[in-house]
Image 1 (spheres, rainbow, N blue to C red):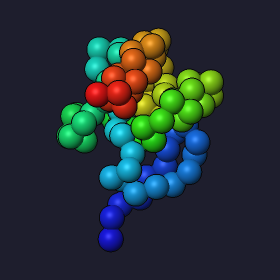
Image 2 (cartoon, rainbow, N blue to C red; image 1 turned 120 degrees about the horizontal axis):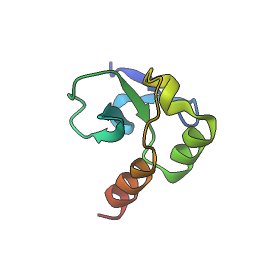
Image 3 (cartoon, helix red, strand yellow; image 1 turned 90 degrees about the vertical axis):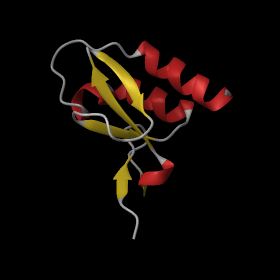
Image 4 (cartoon, rainbow, N blue to C red; image 1 turned 180 degrees about the vertical axis):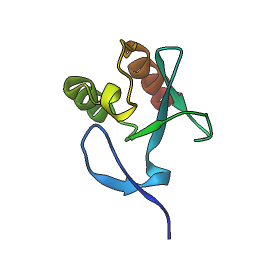
Length: 85
C-alpha cells in the first residue's frame, strides 16, 4: 500500500507518487525531485492552482515550520519549468 500525503495547497489527500515534495534550503523553497533532501518537507500537487492556494494561505511557512522569511517566488517558476519541460 502506497503512503498517502496531504497537499498543502488544496488540503486533499493523495498518493505520495502524485505529489511533489518541497523543502527549504537557505531560505528558498526548492522542489525535492527524489524526496531525499534533508529537512522537513511539505507535499504539493504539481499544479499552478495548488501552488497559488498554498501561497495565498501562507501554508509553506507553517508546513515547513519556518519562522523567518522564505522566498516563495522561485517555487512557481520551478513548477512551471517542470510542467513545460
